[in-house]
Image (cartoon, rainbow, N blue to C red; front, side, top):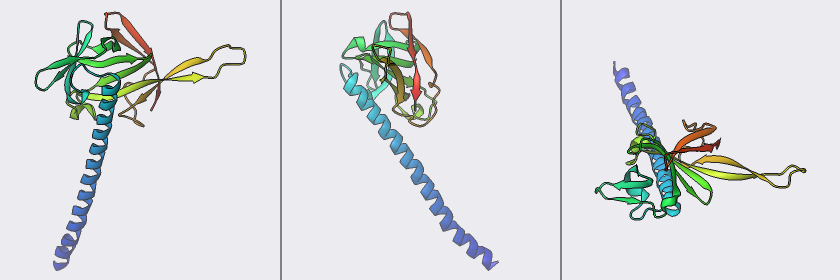
Length: 187
């Protein structure tokens, strides 16, 4: 009987140490995800700035006619400083599941998922930011010019499969027409 008491006392510190290590590991992953999300939103602030405020503070995005609006917790809202950067969306205008922005010929897709690994913890439910990166392909000896292949890189899900990893994706253009993007995904 004494032996079982000793064993349970010896097991308890080991169990507490194991739990503490796991909690620390989970906390570090959450911090890493939070830092990646903050960096992704800083990228948006640099390349797709809002008229007022920061993407860091946005709680939701909405398409209003042909404009993208970002809403803040205090009830205020702002559009993009350069309205032409908004080109397309998926989902509904009042709750888009994706927004496509474009700058200097390259696209950026903001993906929203309120039940996603990251989106569930983000105020705006931002699950991923994917960046289109043009890659020049070498020309064949008989060709006179290079061709460009479009690859997509995820800022938040590097190395992880994503529901958005499909070859071609169709969006609704801001004018209501179709907007298609060819996708070759690099994780």
